[in-house]
Picture 1 (cartoon, one colour):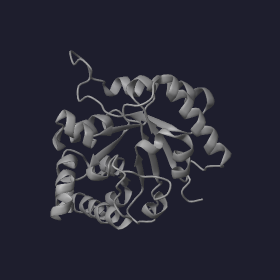
Picture 2: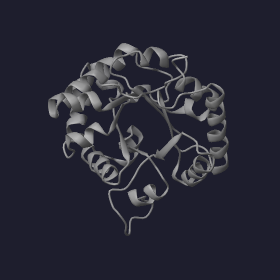
Picture 3: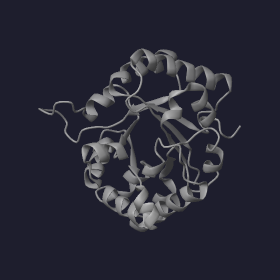
Length: 258
């Protein structure tokens, strides 16, 4: 089964709505100049909540093939949840993707695997695609228990989902020690864990689900290392952080095949 690679830029807490407009326009122009085939490599930007409406307006006005999404979502539909954003709000803004369970959400907001699974279910029920994050800290990597740890995350996150829902989802493996540090897992490291994730999905569900689900690698992805990472059989794209804030650099990552 052919899986379309997904390059998603997680802007984190960067760029106001004016800067967001400039970046999206620059990215679109750069990719157009390079003749990028969006059906071969899907492209998405994941801006802060305050930028999504601006990104939507640009994408709609210029019929841009760039997709976009949100960095988090609430498990509640509405109510007295100050600071929370519902799936209904995101679908009205035309979002395609929602990141759930990023390591920074886990670290700073105490999000559990079970909560991440609940958020993924809400996203799927709303017709959007969750990007479910998993990954280990440096001490777990050094102890050699990283694969076991990540598979434990996978088991808990996917427990409430059906095979069809998992097949439509994206899983992003991001070793915490490689996020924003300049350190990056070797292509072999990425394949080891991404391959193990795919195998576990097959064990939990079936072979067709395992072949359908897209598995990204994230953690200090840059244009200089993306080609080798993408050459791995079980890596279906990248969740890009800092490098996605520069249109030229992110475009090079997207067009890694050229």
